[in-house]
Length: 114
Image: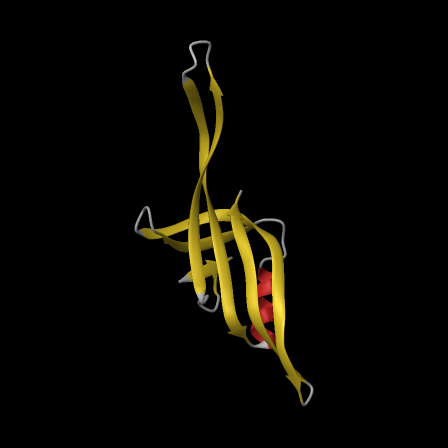
């Protein structure tokens, strides 16, 4: 479902594709809105209910470079799409810590198209 730099990552529990228009908008002297669309970009909102400590570490290392390639299913195109993205803030909750083994829950971050 989702690849980062060619590597298949675990399917997220939630996968939301945001389609964002980047534009310059202002009203002219007649009061009419004039909008210049500069670009349309994607924001992928990803979350996992649970991941192993190995998967958490692996995925976080995949999204640590400033920019990286992401392949995903785009709902507008109804097809696979590849783009260059960067990662927003990451949050990882801890479910528990038993017998020296940590388990993670509620892993969340956004991937924003460059």
